[in-house]
Image (cartoon, rainbow, N blue to C red):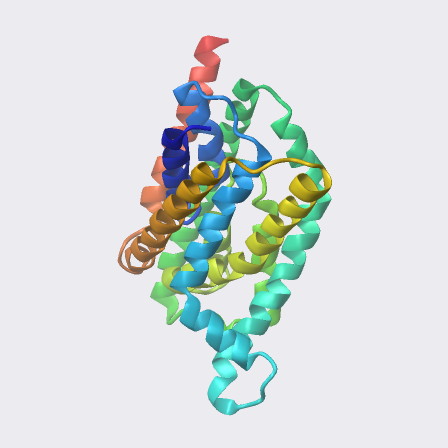
Length: 279
């Protein structure tokens, strides 16, 4: 793993983890397009650590308020306490589904790079359909009245959004896109859905990163990249990821998710057409 690869993949992860266009999909596509070997699990841990740090830093105030409110009964902290418990309960189905289908996703990683890219193409089209469908729902809900804030949604909606997050382990199926689309479909506006999506990502990314370090590095004896590459990748991913969050939240407040739907649709279709032509 070179410094150039660390920077390129760090930028890719930082942007695509938060924009609803699939980070796992792009991390499969980039090495394929550039003729690089698929990076190992150790580097995957490094990239996800960077996006976890970016999320925690950006939402540090929200997370602190949630952490200090979760076991209190103070009326002034009711909204923070409510969101904290919604995130906790929303994480439960995410973990169950991710563990259930983990072996299937791991099996995809053993396939040839061309086959992985082909699979990504199909799931990018599904991401596009989810984003386009959620945008239609958002417009209908705005016409009917005010959408719900995150702290106002009932528990079952948090469980539903968490379920959507669990299925987003498929490469090419955007985690943020799936959860934002689910939030909109369940009555939240785009910005509220995006904020809840990012807060919901913190425990699942933290758990997945810790699990990979424990099982793949400590138990299985795998190794992380060299220190310089690791630091560069984490710093790059963190900075770019923070910028991506800063861009997306005001963007979804004022603009349509249709732009991301169009991008993922064109990219997915392009992959499938290229596969058909080369067959």
